[in-house]
Amino acid sequence: MPMDWADFGVDLHLELDPSGGRRAGLERALRDAIRDGRLPPATRLPATRALAAELGLSRGTVSAAYDQLVAEGWLVARIGAGTEVSPLRRVAPPPAAPPPGPTHHRYDLRPGSPDVGLFPVTAWLRATRRALAVVGADAYGYGDPRGRPELRAALAGYLGRARGVLADPERIVITTGYVQALVLLTTVLRDGGTPAVAMEDPGLTFHREVVRRHGGTVRPLPVDERGARTDLLGAGALAGVGAAVVTPAHQYPTGVTLHPSRRHALTDWARSTGGLVIEDDYDGEFRYDRQPVGAVQGTAPEQVAYVGTAAKTLGPALRLAWVVLPARLVDPVVDAKRHLDLHTETIGQLALADLITTHGYDRQIRTVRRRYRQRRDLLLARLAASSTLGGISAGLHATVPLRPGGPGEAEVLAAAAAHGLALSGLTEHHHEPAGQSPGLVIGYARPPAHAYPAALDLLARVLPGPDR
Image (cartoon, rainbow, N blue to C red; front, side, top):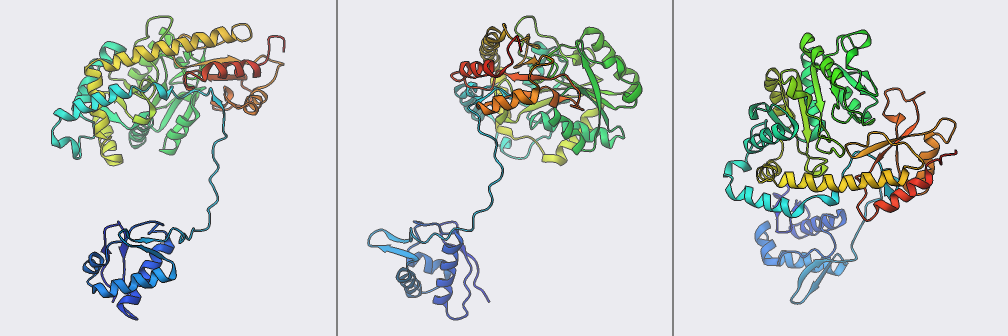
C-alpha cells in the first residue's frame, strides 16, 4: 500500500511506494518530483529531521536518500545552507506549439478601449481603504446576486442626476461587464419564448455573437443619419422580435444620436408589443459640443433595460457594469445571475460605491472627458484637410469614410498594418459586410498620451489624399 500523501513545507505532495524499501521509495518520489518540475531548480528541501517526522520515517533513512540523490546530481548539499534541488536538473517538457498571438503594432487606433493609463490609481486605493475600513465581515462572504447595496444605492443617485435614469436600487443588478448583462437578458428572453433580438446594423460584431451563443436570434436593425430605424420595429423582418438593442446616445459605430422621433417610435413599439429595449449607454458621459443626451430609459422605465459600465470611465479590467431593469425582469434576471456566477466580485463594488459617493467618480469623468476632447480636437485638426469625420460630437471614436474610386478599405488597413498601425474597418461592423460603403472607425482614446501624436501622423500618411 502506498504511504499517505505528505505536504512537507514546499507545497508539494509525495506519494511513497514502500515496495523495495522505504529509502528507495523516497528516492523515487523525489526524483519524480524533480523530473516532473514539481520541485524546480534551487528549491530548498526540508531538513532531514522535519521530513522524517512528516513522513513517519527515521532520520537516517531520509539522510541516506538525500546523500544518494546528491551523489547522482539531483540535489546539492551545502554546509549551513541545507539541501536544494540542483540548478542543473531541469527536465523541460517538449514545447507546445505557441498559440497564434496578435500582430504587434507600434500604434493602435482601434475603437473599444480607453487609455488605461488614465486609471485613477491613487483615488481607487483611497476608496478601497475607506470602504474596507467600515464594511462588515459579511462582505467577504457570498453576497446578493444583485450586487452590494452600497453600490446599487450610489448608482441610483448618480444615474438619476447624470444620465436621467429612473433607478430604484432594488431594480439594479451589478454585472461582470456589459457582456454579462447582455448574456443575462438574452437568457431571460430565450427562456421566455422570445429569442429574436433586433441589433443595430452596423453594430459591434462581438455583441451579435454573444446573443447567438446564448440562444438568441439576431435580426438586423438598419441605421441611417437619424440613428436606428426604430420605426421599422414590429413589421417585416423585424416582426415578432422580443427585444431591440440600441445605442441611442452615440450609435456605435456611426456616432449619430437617435432622433427624437425614433426615440418615441422605440418606446411606442415596446409599450404596444411588450417588447424590451436594451439601452447600451457605453459612453454616454462623453459629450463635447453639446449637453449630454439623456437616457431613453428615463421616458419609459418599464420598457427599457438600461446598461451602463465603468469600462470607459475607469477601465475594462474592473469588469463592473450595471443594468437597471423593468420590474417584471428583476426576478428572472437575478435568478439567471445567481446560476451564472452567484454574484460579481465584492471589493471592486465597494470601492466604486465609495468613489461615487465621495464624488471622485465625477472628478475622474471630468478629467478624462477633458483629455479625450483634446484628443478629438487634435484628430480633427490633423485630418480636416483630407477627410470628413463622423460621430465627433461625443464618445471615444470617429468614422472616416473612404472615397469611391480611391484605395479600398482592405488596402488602407493593409497599408496601415505594414507601417505598424492598427485600424478598424467600417464594413466589418455590418451584419452583411459585402457591398457596404467603405470606411474606418478611428478610436482616439486607446494610445497613451505620449504616443498619440505619432499615431495621428502615421494615420495621415496611410489615409488617401484629397486627390486620390
